Length: 540
Image 1 (tube, rainbow, N blue to C red):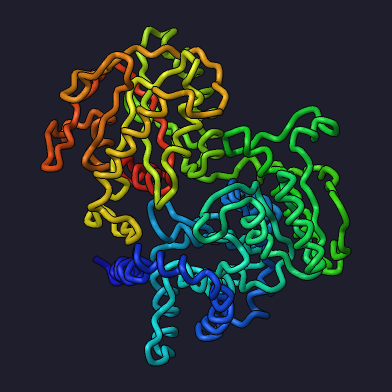
Image 2: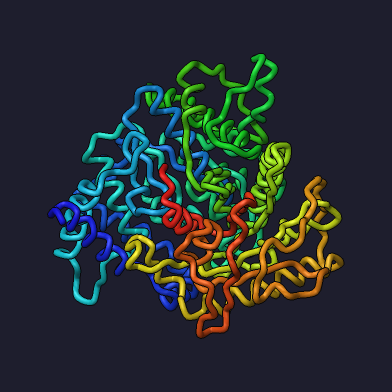
């Protein structure tokens, strides 16, 4: 092993030791009132690693928050600015396979060598200045410091920064003079940290607004918009709304082709275009776009140059509306982890898989559809699965089988996958609960209010002989796997797959006939998506 590779691997191990465990996360939830201290400590930490606020603000920042689509919007914005000739930095979370994905230069993750080098510079600088009883920053804060150090040191002149959670007290909000801020679709998520209502969550997100710095939002629900407008007036930040993307047809014969799939990406693309336009105008003259606004102020459409078009077309953002094919299997993957986002992802899967199935059946190829689901943290499984269940009720579209399996993979397989927030001992008991919830949702339509979606896919019944598929005909076929690796092996018809019953009583099914083409929808967690990509050896 080369010294550079060793440095990277050792850096990842040291970084993982900074993760908050379940107990620490709970303690943080109980101390929300002290969150404002976080930014004071972050400013001090920046100074300790040799970055001043003036240097940070000098890299020209686009700061983006929201509940849904902030990663995609940030990726589109970075791609557009890069096509305009800027040297871009992009900080996002979480990563899918390797932690270095979170810190990107010119659209690509920094190298293992660069990651290791900057990690130890930041680690050593902070360690040497710890006061008695003080600890190193936790995982996300450390990576934020490291990203800012990389961007300043490498001469970035356009930095797109995605908020971690919320905005107001997020460690990224140490930024004091962004060129422009963006707010994607708002909804209910991270309630233990941000609040239980859309108003409380909107207030947290609006915390990234700064004095005389323009903020652009996608159209928001009335209650959320009202909070954003109040916060904007309070700090004297101009607030604008991005126009509908399809309104572009009024000035162009065709809409730009987006490199990202999914209808919802049009909303994110419209916001990215407006953020990029304002960024470039303010980078040339910071006096622009500083006049406070009143009421709803929708921005005019931007006439798209070839750089805009290429930025939208060439943008890649893995794990979101992501389709990848293997021998005998098509994986439709989306890391959606809110009920609204899962509903959008399921709509996309239904449309795409129907087209593929029609093509395959025309060639006399049998197809089966499979749902693979899990969630991270304490999000209510019932709420996350309900959009899918409601799409199946009253519809001919059915899943032939559903898989629940643990999210975690062995740290021996991938060091980057270690997540101390997930307790391995609880994973198997949780997936049993997920199975019960799923069966209840499908068999009790009166308990829900969502409308069904129309489709034309007919269920073909059981697709394999299995020890645990002997259930009543009106119940769904559900399989529990003891590990994510075994689930992927089963889907792949891997010869190393082992039919067994583990000590916990989870019985694994026999392999599917190789002549059957599987359409697999993976959703519910970006961690499930990333670890699935690891076993699939997905390249992106």
